[in-house]
Length: 97
Image (cartoon, rainbow, N blue to C red; front, side, top):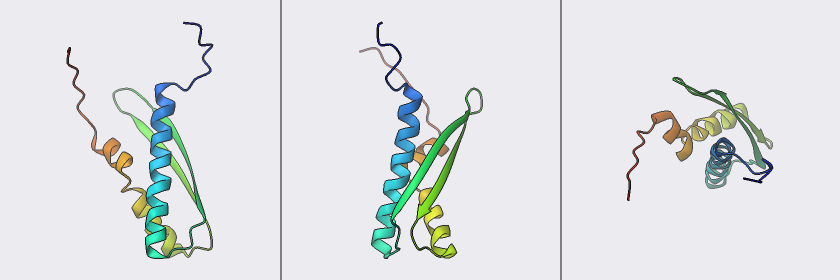
């Protein structure tokens, strides 16, 4: 259609949503708990797609953090709404309107 394949594809939007949600969720928690988190780097990769799908998130916390704080932040990262949605799965339905 003349787009020259320069725009993100749907998978790019999915991994971007997961990475952004993870970062926001962790930062909000850190702010609320007084954890000195400066920033979070999240890299998301789709490893497998098909009958079984697999996504990998590499998460790096930046700041003067103890191991206990890092573990706590990882627990919260796994509670981000997009992560939970993907983990639980979704039945997809389409309707003609």
